[in-house]
Image (cartoon, rainbow, N blue to C red):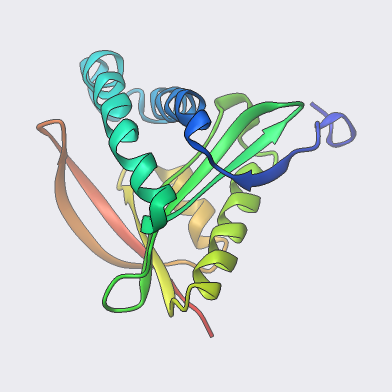
Length: 174
């Protein structure tokens, strides 16, 4: 797509009616991003089932005041979302998920969603934000670093029993 042919998109608060779209974007984005970084079994079997169950539990909690979930849409289709938890005891908002459909990456959807989540976090009284990114996800690391986020730690973790290494990135509000 050329810059002039990029469809416009808008952001809005998620609703329970967005559950299917959020789950679909989450699964498709993870499959495209993490293929070759984690097992195919995780991406094709374990993660899709876990994703659906997680969103069925998490989305109602988020909408009831547990945080912020925003959806990016274009021509009536959800194309990305961000999920940010309410500020923790240290005043930091955890970005739990930031995903765009694979064919919408690089078009500004992630940037717009992240900036909107940052505005929400500031309005919620947060002093900053943090997130985890897979150590092998060089594209995401570059995305966050180019926007002023800095590495704040490293965590040995697991996805559905599979070991992963996550890097913690953070940004402080001034």
